[in-house]
Length: 206
Ligand code: HEM
Image 1 (cartoon, rainbow, N blue to C red):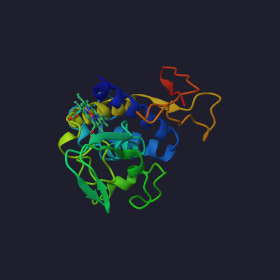
Image 2: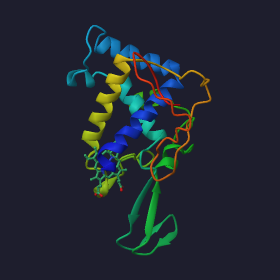
Image 3: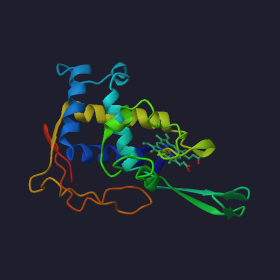
Image 4: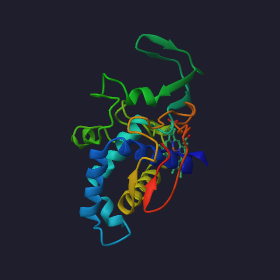
C-alpha cells in the first residue's frame, strides 16, 4: 500500500514545497503549463505530458532531494568485495539514496533545488543506470511501479500547478518553511505548522 500511494503523495508534497521556496522555478513551470495546456481549459491531457519538459525536470530534482525511500534495504546473496571491503554473504546492506542525491562529488550545489540541471542531455535518467540518482532503486529489485508512479506524479502535479496559484500560508515567512522529515524510513514531511486550506488561492502546509 505504501509503495503504490504514499510514495507519490510524499513526492507531490515535496514538489509544492520546493516550488514555493523557489518562485522563479514556480513561474517557469506554470508558464510552461500555460503555453502547452492553455489557460482556457481545466484538464491536462496525456498528450500534453510529453511536451512538459521543464515539469519533468522539476519532478526529477524533487526526487533527487527527497527520495520517498531514503534507504534501500537489501541482503547480499553471495560474498563480495566493494572498494577493498569484504562483504560476507547474507549481509544486510542499506543503500542511502538520500545521500547519493546530495553528494557534492556527483552534483553541483547539491542542496539547491535546481530543476534545470536535468535539462543537460547528459543528466541521469530514472532507470537506475546512474547510481548517483536512484529514487526507484536499480537492477532486478528496482521499483516495478515506476512508470505508473511517474505518470500519477506528473499528472497530479501538472493539474495542481495548472489550476491553482500557490502561496505560503499567512504567518509563514520565506525561508521559514517546514522542511523536516518525520523520520528516515520515508521522507514524510514533519509538518509541524500544518495549516492546509483549499480554494483558488491554495495554501500548502509549510
Ligand atoms: C514516486 C513513486 C515511487 C517511488 C519513488 C518508488 C520507489 C521504490 C523503491 C526505491 C523501491 C525499492 C527498490 C529497492 O529495494 O532497491 C520500490 C519497490 C517497489 N515498488 Fe515502488 N516507488 C513508487 C511507486 C510505486 C507504485 C505506483 C507501485 C505500484 C503500483 C510500486 C510498487 C513497488 C513494489 C511492488 C516494490 C517492491 C519490488 C521488489 O521488492 O522486487 N511503487 N519502489
